[in-house]
Amino acid sequence: MSETNKALVRSFVEAINAQDWPRLHTLVADGFTRHSTAGGEPGIRSRDDLIDFLKGEYATFPDATEAIDDLVAEGDRVAARHRFRGTQTGPLGPHAASGRVLAATYLAIYRVENGRIAEAWAEWDNLSGLKQLGHYPES
Image (cartoon, rainbow, N blue to C red; front, side, top):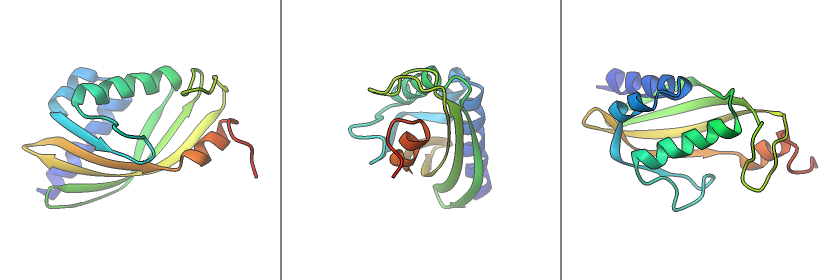
């Protein structure tokens, strides 16, 4: 089961990189929930919310790519260390496009249910990202 769940997370990242939204419907449960202090609450509460979030991310970072550096699985959980890279050519919340590249890692734990990703906990360093993009002064 662990290898199957890890393959599911790999397929999830491949679908995101390909912006293959129909494929995400086969990989992510309809009632998907993402928990994230960095992403704010109430956050993402459905598969459609996730797809809308990802489309918005690509509007801000059209050349965005994600990679997986580490995957560890046990039971219905998969822990991943991801790498994100993209050029900010669109607005990011209140911040205008900077034209700068964001290169960041983030951690996520996925819960798999009935062969689909049902829940995720994802955290990243917002301050570091804002500094890279020039939206927060370097100290």
